Length: 497
Length: 123
Image 1: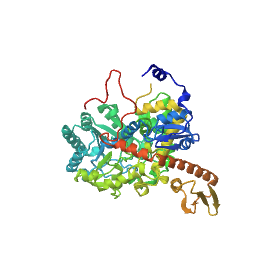
Image 2: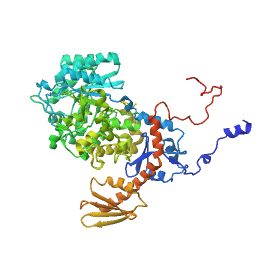
Image 3: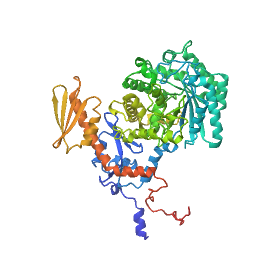
Image 4: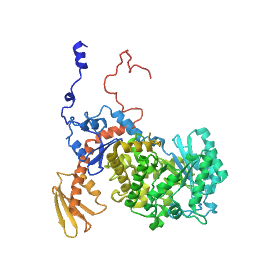
């Protein structure tokens, strides 16, 4: 190399050398969606986004963006366009795509065991059938419980969750206890990371139960629908008021297990729609720093009481937005509070990682992330599937727990469901700008529209998620870094500095 | 695009098929088929879209404006989808390939001033 070459090499070139006004770029796969009256969002194949003026996507496709424009470098850097037919860094993009879908490597992680259908409540929105407290025929048998646990250890997932549901699972505490002990015994060989969760109404705790939970590091998930007037109306209990009992149960569990070992979940009924602020305030008063503004699911018993449980998705969205605005304002005022569903979506938008939330995944969470072992030995693709079965619809029954793992998880039914579980291939979803953040839910569409593929223009799932995701982008566009800081604190579950 | 407002709350749209493909038209009107009855036919070099079951109180001019915008958007989506079909297939093949079988050498010259050759090592 002679001196002249080195001199030329070291000399900085002017910006005009690089920005030639050229528009000869190549497109990379991306989609777009209108955010508000001025902006649209471009989303690439791995979920990276740019919020840009409306019409930018058309300008990009029609080669009207030249390299002198500021956006040109952003489009190159974020893999929306490339100066070569195949970008030099395509392997990086491929690795990022693989990362987004890495939940598939783990396969089924959440194993739900319905240990009993018995319950001491009679909630009008309950999605499963329930029987009175003394009908022990509705408890799972030890043989079926053992078979389900043995299937659980056949999953390739290194980290598993064993969740006990009902009815009220603690009415069959002997089965919960046996299940945890048997799982721990088998895990001496398998050495998986296990999280034990009991979904309980928190009204039947005893010293024995809580000592066992403390000993085995069990997490408690309970139901709290808001203030007493609302909770008691939604969750009636013969003889006593549910709210007072739940609050006593929560306090007892916190005392014995630790504050963070108990979480609460609310369900939005028609009555709840008018009280988003009161519900959030109630969660704060009771020491919770997160809330999931969760709509009711159109399954099972919930469908029998249309007046109390059926509402237009638009009414739910108004409730959600009002609640979200309030929670954001609380955070701006220095009070850390998280809305869980928004956080699920934000993790998809703002991080490169997948989110293990079974209702918003593609391929769908059914079988790929969750399976249900029912009290009668039936195995279902999702929790909602067994709720349909309570109305004698066994479409999503995979078989019996005594069947082979292969026939349950890779059998004909699983293969059939796979035709409908990727939003990349569904009409309406395939072109949607929010595809990377959304999911497919064949069980919901079967339950609400009668077919597994679903019809997007009238789908409540689509209406809800499309508007929630658009709303989040609208907030990011309007409030910029201020809101991003709050959203990142939710993702990290740590208050802002 | 020619627009006719008929009696009985029907709208008939006539679109030149050289402007928008049948695929673009289908994808666009899919989203209107939840609220309205949609009928699409191909006649000569035109696509005829008949929309019925339109409520009396609906602002039809706003509806037409939205349809025009949606057609443009779906046309853009088709341009992007067609032009990026192969690179998307390659991307997904690379993402799910085992043993790095579709990996390529990184661009540029790899070298080190102390003479270490990054390719000269034993696995």
